Each structure stands twice: as structure tokens, then as C-alpha cells.
Image (cartoon, rainbow, N blue to C red; front, side, top):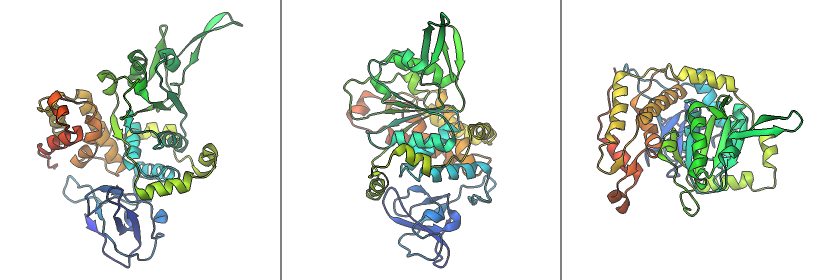
Length: 403
């Protein structure tokens, strides 16, 4: 790690999303990550041109940020390169996030988690209160990626055929013709998914796992890439149904969207407090920076990222320990380990590496595991947090030193 201390260097000045401290790092670290010395939060360094420093000249040092450079298994250390000198995956990831930031403020964990899931053939479940911009995010993502966007508002009377589509009798041809449902898209927002009964949820199981729909013995394949972003409200319980474990297990990540900071909320008011049409704003301000074909190519490339045997053992220990941990009566399935490995590979690719490190696993461990474990009755009565228990569990496992 290196610390930015040179007052004469070209600097990027930005704010920590957790403690609101202002950090400063060298402009060459744009697009990488920095560790806040105040709260220890790992935050993404914005593009130099969009920072408060204007991309040049010295700025006042309020707090210094430590640039995070993932360790090299050979012990030499690897620094995150600039977009010009980095890998193709790094460049695409930065271009995607930079475009999203033009209209979508904050929620870095949500953005990164959705992109990791997309490039890992996974899906995302978001737990948040209404009004945090989930629809805006998915629409923006669809425009940036050049993918079709679809939305389903789940309600108590929603039927499986309303999702998948159904055969419709054509009076002209006197034959039944299949009319595709809203799942025949590439980015699907399943809004308030827990408001529909189990039979409707069951219609999504085959779709999410196999990317296809089977109706009346006929199979229809979905266009790839295909990402389901489902949402549920953690506050309201009236008129809702618990998602079955079989469906929860098919979500690669469960992400929690939190309220924005004071500065971020002020920025949201400035950007979206007028009467400007959102569709026109997306059309005029957001550029497509990649294609579905390129996404599929990079998804296949992420499968070639090397995972050391010691790291495989580390992932395996984490998943298996959840099944014997005293505060859990239900542990994670083998699919959790697969998600951890796939996500670590994709995250390493976004960081410009062709190998995964323990930090990649630790960074995504909570989103992968938090919806796959169930607390015991005693732990629930005591008000214990799933995330805190998982963090304590992970800390008991020795982190491997890769060679």
C-alpha cells in the first residue's frame, strides 16, 4: 500500500461514504480503491476529472487515503493500473461505473454487487426501503450495457403465466401461439418479489437457474446475458410471503441498499429535483459503453482466473463452518461456495488480476452468505445480527498465504 503525501502531485479529492471524511490520493489511483484511515472503509476512487480537485493541482490535505493494492501471490505486489494501461475488464468496469454515476448517486456496494453477479451469471436480491433508486439503477444499467430492460411489479394476484407468458389462441390462424411474458428480457427488475405467493415464485426457479422457460412441453431460451434484480421491503410484513429457501439459494448476492449520506442526498435533489423526464435524461446523458456480446466474452474470460488450491480450501472452510456454527440452524449450501469462487474470480478480473486472492473472497462473503443461513430461535430472540455472526465466523478461519 502507498500513501498519498505529496502536496504538489495531481490529486483526487473525494469523500468517504461511511464516515464522511474527505480523502485525498494521487490521480493515478483513479478507478482503484482506497482505505479510509478514519473508519477503515474501502471506497472506490472516482475519476480524476470528476473529483473536487479538478484533476490537477494541489488540494488541502484533510485526511489521507491509503490506496489499496491487492497482494501478489509471488510477494511482489501489484498496483491497480490506469484505464489506459489496465486490462480490458478493468476498462469496461470503470466505464460502466462512470456512466452509472452520471445519474445514480452512491450505493457503491449495490453497483459492484450487481456487476459482479452479471459477469458471473448470477442474480441479485436487494433488501431496501422504497425510493432508493433501484428502478433507476437497473434502467441505467440496461442503457449502459446495451441490454433490454424489463420490470415486473409483484402482487398477491400475480399468476405464473403473467411472468412467463402463455399460449394465446389466434383467431386468424385457428392455432395457439405462444406470447412471451416480461421475463423475456436481459435485465429484469422483480419489484417487491415477496408480495406474491409461492406458486408465482416457483415460475422463476427454472428461469433463474437454466435461463429458459418450459410451457406445454415446449422450451424457450432467454437471450443472454440475463440478470434478475429482485427487491423486497424489510419493513412491511403485511401481505408478504417469505421466499422459499430454494429460490433464495438461486440468488448469488443479497445486497442491502442503505439511505444516502447527507451530501449524497443533496446531490440527488440537485440532479433529480426538477421536472426533467427521466427517459429523456437517460437517452441524452448516458452512453452505451459495451455490448451483450462483450459481456458474454468477459464472463467466459472470468472463468479462466486462477484460484489457488489453498484459496479453494479457504472458501470450503467458510461454507462448511456455517453448518456447524451454534447460532445457525441452517447453514449454506454448496452453491454458496460456487458463488464465492465465481464472484472472487470476477472481482479479481475487475481489479486487473488473472488470479484471485483472499481479499476477493472476504469482500463478497457477506452478500453471498447472509441469505443462505438461518438464525436459531435463541439468536433471534437475543437480536443477534446475521452479518455480525458471519463476520465473527470468518475471523476464526486462518487466511491462507498464497505462494
